[in-house]
Length: 211
Image (tube, rainbow, N blue to C red; front, side, top):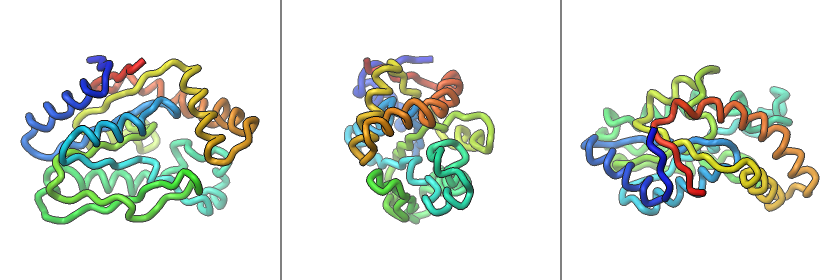
């Protein structure tokens, strides 16, 4: 497995993949909560002409639905996403559909409200690169095993655990949690999810280690 140590190197790898494919490629950025996936994915899209970002977070189930299911206290776990909708969106983005002349709409995610935002993302048919990022792109069960076959490559982000936890706590505080609640969520639900994600890392095609 190739380890890439700069955003430029990641961009070069994706550009080469796109050139070799001669058509649309869909690449994934996977990693544990707080690993830096969103930052890397956004930076990657900014460097690549004709690239668009598709966050997996947009497929969170709405808060009201999580409450109905009794899952609100572990939001972010694999079964708190609309997995079928995510898989259907990825399938619609494959090269066979990219030349259909039809744009694909997908939800975004509002971190302030922790709610999905319908149709916040649009992928025009002429855009050759789609970058999707999320925790569970490489998960091998629970229906998530349908995701990886729809991706042309998956880059797994590695980072020191202490750095990752400090980022998570800061992010939770930024979006309204008290310091105590932020630490409890980062070391509780987030950390349980991280254990699942880290176990899936060997299935990646590349590793990203930015230090």
